[in-house]
Length: 409
Ligand code: PMP
Image (tube, rainbow, N blue to C red; front, top):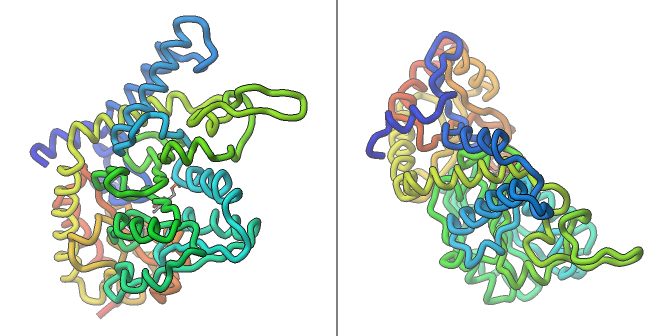
């Protein structure tokens, strides 16, 4: 990151104090802060362009439609889609994965089929598939982790056969930080005729993404984790799959023709966008990917790898602190989950908050993973492009204070 101080100035929220200290925001895996460019784009939309999209014959509605569809094109370019038609705006990663489960899975899975996930998935990439199994009689299976918190590729061959119809894999773990070998898993899935669905909620904000190079079939992400607003995300899907898919939601905007008993659907992606869409949010999403592209995703990754390496080094100085995740920075992103002796992670988060440091504590929507880790909860510090080494340093005295308060030797 060439000029980080200039970058931080783009984020008004980061300029404040919290509990009498400069705010140290280390919870970007949960949601990210927004640059002025995103706030301004949404403000300008409401002040100057607000109208409902697609149906308007008047100029203002056409301008709003151009902004909305323009954001779709920006998101398409950001993930390397072949066409903007491959981008469906959704409420976020969760609803994107549900769209695939119920639009594709419901029509392609039979009793005895299998869905292969990994042991580190977020609930958003577990529960929709569980619901689908209830409806179809399919079963879930999980690719295990190695002792250093990566997925065990040696077990891939015995987990994959022609009964597996879907492989659901995270691009980057929100708990362990693990970067998953998506392209290798997708190639193996394709060889047995399975589709690959990527939960990119953490990958898209932190790593360059090219869906063509990954060789996957669907990819889901959330704008709010990549500098954009809440309430919107994207499902990228290969066009021929989207075109063959049924909508999971019906209503206005998504139809070609509605009769009294039957209807026909609009082409993708509008088929999957029933009702008035989140227009201002789409505009904000477009501004967010513009911002990230201007910084450069390779730069984002380089900066975060530097911070994460530094954080792992500094945290290793804290007696009793255990980090859960790959030790090598090349295999992980900037979500660093840890426990400190037997101090409850919620207590740790509260003590750090007194020092102005925002971290998250809990199971981070990954209960099956925490059961495997053998802890009910972890504390998690997570970094983004606006964080600094100084903020990592701020963790150390705060953790020392926690040890003192809890009498940890
Ligand atoms: N997957 C992962 C890996 C995540 O970190 C999250 C958000 N914590 C989600 C899915 C769900 O994203 P959203 O709540 O925006 O739908």
